Length: 229
Image 1 (cartoon, rainbow, N blue to C red):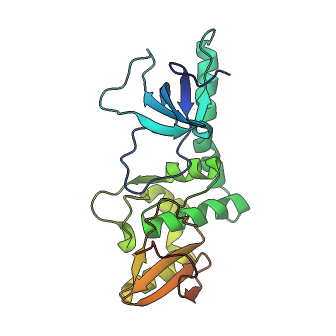
Image 2 (tube, rainbow, N blue to C red):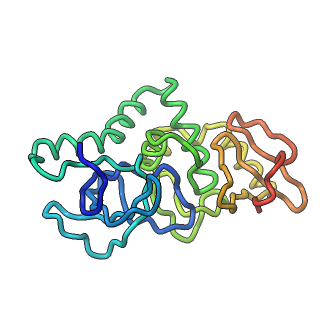
């Protein structure tokens, strides 16, 4: 495959981390051109069409090396490009296989991460690229009204909400009960905060609790959570 120097092309595979309040310019499987180097393993890229022309209305985006599939500068045939696109779309194909196997480890892994996104309106951080890519496919912009009181800008599409049976997920049910009791979902705000899909932080006045992925509820937020609000 090719390199990631300025002017080279790549397939965008999806964001490793989702920023809750950013308007994202790239979508999974976009063809992009590298516009600059922003530091070690960090690049600025913009989406282009099949002819290599910049897509109108789409700004540059900062991406990590692991989010890109480099393409050769020369000698890149249409068949090779199509194979690369199939690799980029592989997350979607993989997800289709996973949702046909309820109860499998892969199904439960995706379901747990999707449950966190559903109740918070955000994606968990510090996940592996494949997990992020799979989860990205299940989401859609939510506009002004966040799901279940969460403040993030995304939600699970109705299709994947049904296919992953999130209405019966223990975390979703437990958070729903808490919201009915006037508890609020709290999101992370610090630049170095981790948001694990295994727990959701909630507050009611001065009371703090965290709901675990298995639906259990623990008192307090633990240590080092001052940036949640």
